[in-house]
Image 1 (cartoon, rainbow, N blue to C red):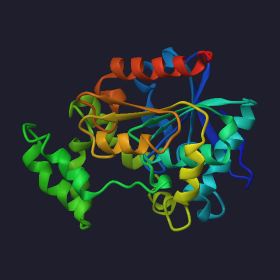
Image 2 (image 1 turned 90 degrees about the vertical axis):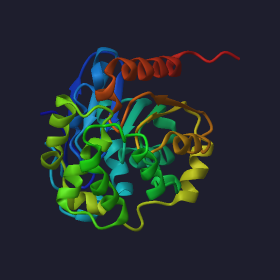
Image 3 (image 1 turned 30 degrees about the vertical axis):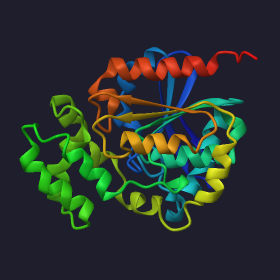
Image 4 (image 1 turned 60 degrees about the vertical axis):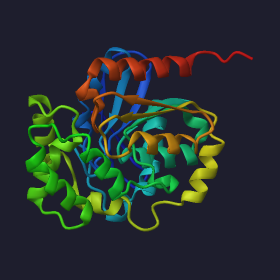
Length: 287
């Protein structure tokens, strides 16, 4: 397994798939191993995906100090991976909670970002969080689903602050645009792929300085894509549009029928959207 050593001595593993210009991929969870990306719906046919296993997940080592699971402390891991390959600038894709890490990395190392693709991504680093009301907006969109009645109360319990493990299991279909065999297999792997202890540290106090991050993103000279799922609760499309306004060069696209994992719901549309954005990001500017 390809690996490198982080500044604190932790072994970091990464997985490479596909051909072409590199695309550095940061998984969400938080603290879920990159295996859940698969080939990102066939995006590996367009780009060489370099997918990091965050410290303490997948094939990466467990750090000596658990405080280093905090999101801001993992920025150095991303930079170590970039330096390992010797890239001057790199395209970065981040999903879900990985969006916070990508934003903090771009804030600290703006000169290293060629493009930034934020896929159904969080933006707590910018002071934006998803509310219970945002989550409930999705409920109204899914009432015709065969699983709706069994999942509705569990979904509400999650965002009201009193969930059980059974609630998380029952509400899982809300996170997918299609609750088919592919989605069910993908969801079944989550527990094994996630470091729950690390997830509890990821966004702990001190991880984010929204004012500083907002100032940095307002001057980031790199194209940014925010891809939201029509049926996703975090972020809702209107929330993604608000986040886009915090960047100097951002565009928003909403994938129809997609939940939190858009490359599973419609691989062709997802791949086309991201590949086209990356191609535009590499095109020479016209003055």
